[in-house]
Amino acid sequence: MEPLSSLEELTQALRCLPSVGPKAAQRMALHLLQHDRDGAQRLALALEAATRTIRHCQRCNTFTEDELCTLCRSAKRDATLLCVVETPADLMMVEHTQAYAGLYFVLMGRLSPLDGIGPREIRLDRLLKRAQDGVVREVVLATNFTNEGEATAHYIAELLAARKLKVTRLARGVPVGGELEYVDSGTLAQAMRERRLLAN
Amino acid sequence: MEPLSSLEELTQALRCLPSVGPKAAQRMALHLLQHDRDGAQRLALALEAATRTIRHCQRCNTFTEDELCTLCRSAKRDATLLCVVETPADLMMVEHTQAYAGLYFVLMGRLSPLDGIGPREIRLDRLLKRAQDGVVREVVLATNFTNEGEATAHYIAELLAARKLKVTRLARGVPVGGELEYVDSGTLAQAMRERRLLAN
Image 1 (tube, rainbow over the protein chains, first blue to last red):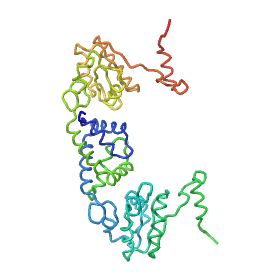
Image 2: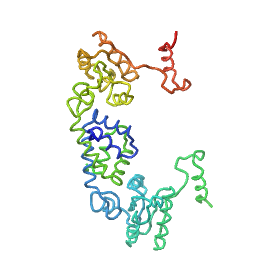
Image 3: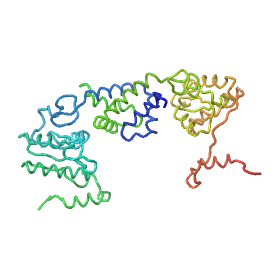
């Protein structure tokens, strides 16, 4: 077999990006060569640097270039609160709300028995150790509201409850600005069951 | 201002890819770090190699790593036919049909006066020189059927006609497998005007 040309190799290599098929990869490769070679070189350096320097925070498991991430090192965060999320992207979403001032633990996944991902694969032992540091008072479960995220939250809740820790879960319900007509009925049913008392 | 972290720099650098916004760039960066560091390293090398080695074919202007591209070097192609396309992606599409055995000229663009792209910017002088090599008998214009592609085809057709060269254009009409009900009326009108004689 002939070795791949540089263009074919670049097109193939671009397929490592999520949701980039053969057609999109080809379009990207040609775009870079024709219009943005500087951008391509910058991207090559950034990929090399990121894969070389980025590792997991020893404390919260998110991505960082240091032993501990910026959040875990910060003295301004409330160390009695620990928010459990599935991924660093979820952590960034929660941070973006500016509604939370505690610390995080990033699972880097979720329980998914069908894919062979159990408590050991997402290192729940590390979460248990982290939550029992004597400072954490409340663990906020912020895994996704998918089947797998919910199962993960339930599983963690039982583990932590057995260790006498306060465990909470993000509220479910109608989205802010949402119109009942367009909310799916599962969400609406849940919002009805978990309705809040306003006056009595 | 603080320098960008490796993760931020990678996210920024991914924005050089076409139709990748801040959200998609972040998703790509996190995906690579979490699931495919080998792929990221391969991509870094491929980008570096491609930007270093890929240049334009001296004869047809497409991308190649050599002085002349594989097609221009091939003895099997019909050198009396020259097909003019806008981009290397278009060249690949025409090759893919296996309905054409001649050579190509890649404009690497199209006339677009509003964007300041005139005959000089797409180097039409090189096309004229190429088409007048004494071997080319017919120039097939395969620019896009957009306004700019059509204008480019017309402009080139006049230049070449003045030099006594045979010039043709890809046929327009109803797509193969197309149903009249779903064809846009402009295409249908064109197909009517350019109807072919089947029997007389």
